[in-house]
Image 1 (cartoon, rainbow, N blue to C red):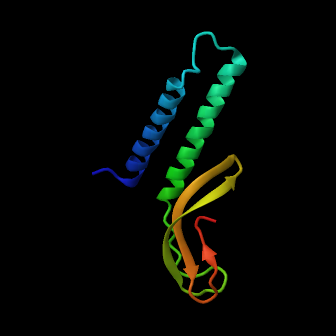
Image 2 (image 1 turned 120 degrees about the horizontal axis):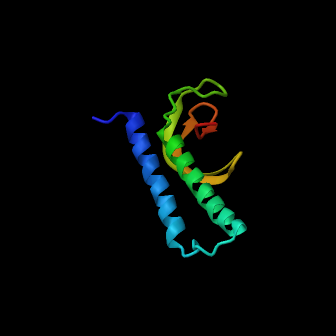
Image 3 (image 1 turned 180 degrees about the horizontal axis):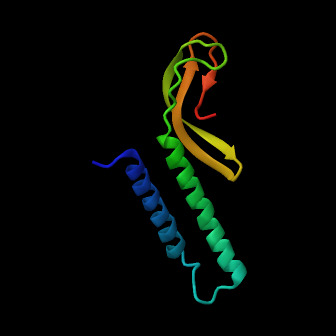
Length: 112
């Protein structure tokens, strides 16, 4: 039976393969490419793969808190919500479980 690390590794390998397949199938890779063209294609693949990995790794995280970090009230699971986030490496859209405090109505979208 695979453990969580093995499952995550399999997902990440599949994402890497998808990014590579996408790069090779779009017709821009050829033996006539200049160095700047090669760097552009690889840079786009790198960005695509980075976003895929970020979504997978963050999707694996489970927020264990049941208390609001603002007031200590009980958090209510409000289901999955999408959010556009800006990280140090760029923007990506994530789908995460959204929580709302029953006392202060503060919305929580982990991880912070």
